[in-house]
Length: 98
Image 1: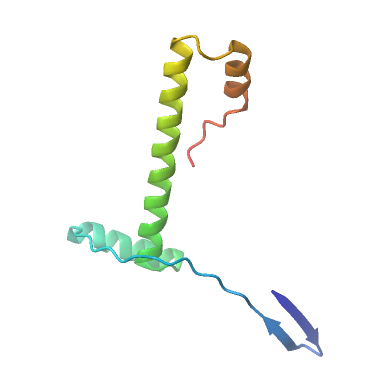
Image 2: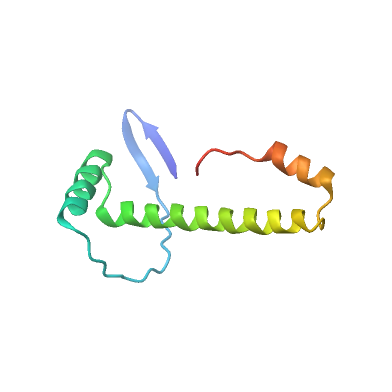
């Protein structure tokens, strides 16, 4: 975004917005979940859709991490991984949630 300010007036503003092509899904939620979702959406100034999309993306990332870790553990148990690499991976890994 480029903004030029002259005498406290915006002279030129260029904004480029890129959208991914998305598909619509229909989900069923209980009333309590919808009320909680609506409250969070208002508090965070986001839409329901944005919150659900973020939650799904985070869940997918956690699943991918679990799958990677399980594969790593299986390979380590079969002595297919150099112990130095294992130590380096463990030292570099951040165990905080995404």
